[in-house]
Length: 175
Length: 186
Image (tube, chains in turn red, green):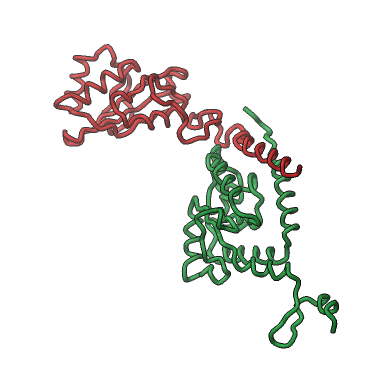
């Protein structure tokens, strides 16, 4: 299965493929350039034989200090029609780079992409609503990056607004 | 015996049926046995609260059997579990919606101090944003501890008048505001 997919990709999308050392993983994976992610996923989704039509997961890895290119965005695809075979697509990107959003291919990628943006700070181009999803809107920093301190840089600013509102309330009550 | 003498001896029985007391203490006594809880359950302490309110431990024995799921019909808010910074404004808003006089019980390590979650996302104790009356230690606390907290709160309600209560809450909110001035912004 993976061999034939690889052949298919090499035949049609060789300009998007990157030669990388294989990671220690039991899921077959290929490496792609960021600009290739939308056409390749579209092709794999609509391909008659492979039909990788289910986006199992979309997440990211921070390889700080371990590899040259810091981040990797992971797309885990599954084919319900074809024996539930899985393939993982990895997109290595550096800090500050962005990845095209795949919401046009998989609608379900909307929230996972927001989550990756929220926790890793990787922006997705053409995303319909790229905002923080799990953390407060005024949060500073991206906590799943390896250089983020566990306790944060001092989180009091998150309740500052809350307190200020009530200082004003108390003052107006006393009048 | 004149009325004046009687008023100086609150709690004195007159025969079997009548007792002398001032109105405040009667009202406070009544209030202390109908503390309707608002369970704000965000974690496993909520499960312990369920056990506390069921027949084995039976919080109804203390007049707190009616969990209110609208903050407007509750007297005390039980904060049962971890409060994240994202949840903090919600909790504060619910506290503001409670009818006066209102009491806060902080149940468990997470609500009282952040517990084991000393991380970027968890509020380090709800006393950062609310005036807490009773803290319950434990992770999660046993139902007996929760009942003990209710009894302690009842004692407090019995001994504290409306004006005293107002003063205490004002003082606590002032303390919160002073202590929580952000040290690091950005």
